[in-house]
Length: 277
Length: 341
Image (cartoon, rainbow over the protein chains, first blue to last red):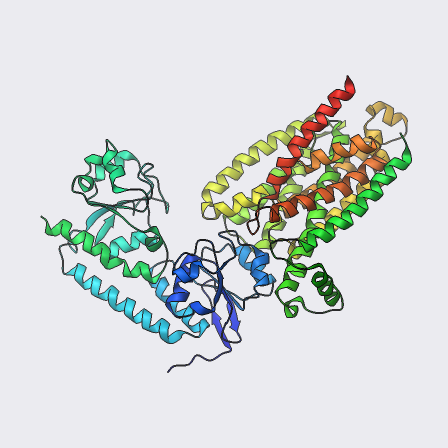
């Protein structure tokens, strides 16, 4: 059994040097992704409060709430946490104000899949759950490698499936480069049609969508039937072939282990497109 | 006019201010019993470290007390600056933002938040300083535009303030587009409020607002002279040009400090002076202190409503002041109309 010594000095994702004197017993999470990671490595029973958006796992949703993007400093301070954890979405002024209250603020930086694995390791170290974190990292790394082999040995390697992500079927908002879903589509054997469009959440023109004619459409909101009703979108190959799927945005928009585990599911959706021909 | 009446209003205001401070420090999204609050304050006055006394002590000493002081100071500054600008421009619609301080502060804050800038590693410090410099810089620019050898022209000040503000709000929109990663934070800053603000803002607010308040208090008789036609004031031996510059400087300093630590909070600087004028009359020896004290009371109450109405959610205080301020202003207007009949 590997033990992590406390006190511990670490450099976090915001390049701050933190001293963790003892194993944290009262943790507050400031993002839904961090909450999921903490529970995934077995530190969940020491989380005392989360944000209103933290709905997974179900135990997390029952915890005290400190706000959403705007946190309530009074509620945070009264809970006397010995560790506050956030990701790179935390506003810098908020981080400073929490530190000014004498709190220890750890920021992880899960900007992509590799970043998620690094964050798991950092969280494991700081919470004293390194063993479980490393087990999970091992499991996820093997899963990624297995899926990569599967894609490389399939027709997807030569010709990735063209994928359109729609956050909103009415307004044609999509997910651009730098988003989690963009990386996940690429790793699963697809090409994101909005991957080269500037901006994280670009609004696509109808012309662009019709010209590119995606083979698969992934919705994170609404219903696949919404596209059938649309006089233009129903002409798309993906709609005609019934390859419109509704994804859970909580899984595909958050930096978590569930996101990584969701990659093979996408590969399952992409493979039949090539095999059918 | 009965002079004692004015003193009663002032003394009542001070008592009210003390009460409002006590209530506002005691009430919030976290419940702290009055006895507990007093024992925390007593322990901290004796030199105890709030962090050692537990979460409630951090709430009272680290968050609520400085926030209430800050809200009171900003309210006093905005109401005091409102009185000064209304006298200077002889215009009842003048508010603390008339010479462009809000647009200047907005630009300063937006640039820092939008592009993630810091000063000595601190973004809080960068936002406060940049907003303050922006506010003072823009009001000085507006003043230079309106200045000529004949002195400062009120009309030019007013128009230049409007034009510069309009130009800056266009620049602010552009900065928000380019710094869109932090868009939400910028929008919340522009809406105004005291969430999480306190000690790290007071070092800027206390000296600037104290100097501004003291300066305008010394100029209270001269403020009365500004209400006269300029020739009449001159014949009474007042150097109108100098008085205007001093009033402009003191009021801009206060407004700039207020807006840089509190964001854009409307109506307090407009409504409180008008309300005070109805009760104590136009004599600035009474009007100025009354406005300042009630400005503080109103702002502390508005912030109290903002952070308790939907607790634990916090509302932008600017929305609260506009929500109550605008109807109250209309009421004042209807009273004025009735008085004219």
